[in-house]
Amino acid sequence: SQQGEEDPQALSIQEGENATMNCSYKTSINNLQWYRQNSGRGLVHLILIRSNEREKHSGRLRVTLDTSKKSSSLLITASRAADTASYFCATDGRANFGNEKLTFGTGTRLTIIP
Amino acid sequence: DVKVTQSSRYLVKRTGEKVFLECVQDMDHENMFWYRQDPGLGLRLIYFSYDVKMKEKGDIPEGYSVSREKKERFSLILESASTNQTSMYLCASSFWWTSITEQGVPNQPQHFGDGTRLSIL
Image (tube, rainbow over all chains, first blue to last red; front, side, top):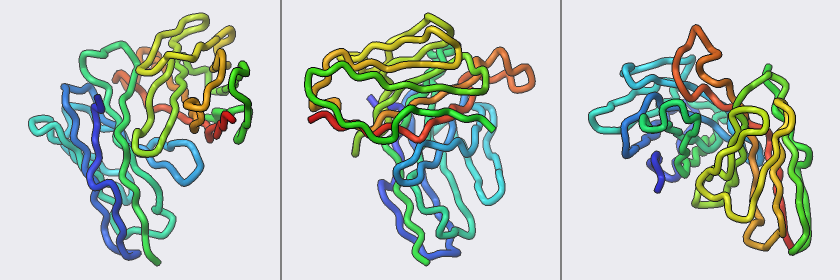
């Protein structure tokens, strides 16, 4: 079963607006990661947040983590056309400690309208 | 910058053929992974390897095997290709977390190749 599931499946916004994507997961984690995938390309790592962190920033990205609700959100501020991509969360599952597997969700398809 | 190179971007093969997908990374990563990506199903792990000659099954290993003879190279083998193996295949690599002394967190970020879109006719 999927460890991480993103919501919404698809999102279209105007350039300059903020985009928020959510991820829910089922079991305890060591960390949670967000990745971006441009059409026809591989995934690119964006940000990693540890289970003992609540919020993390990287440029226009802001990630929050609520371990009590087993959920995370990715906020992209002041969106640009180049942000058009699919975004995936990935979790490791604390039971997998030392077993370097990630489980990816099915992704949110973000479209930025110029 | 980390570079993960997959040998082919597009590949067309016939059912029953033995197919080899090659992946090479240049960052001395211990871990290497093979995923397949299908619409609506996200990424699913086929096999991974944490050291030379070591391998572990992922979530969907049936119909596949792997080979890791050198640290930088991880090969995915479709023993007898079938049409349901038509997919996008992604290779990734990462550091084993204990080799990153300043991070100290398991499951380091994975670095991906650009994928091989494989069609089995």
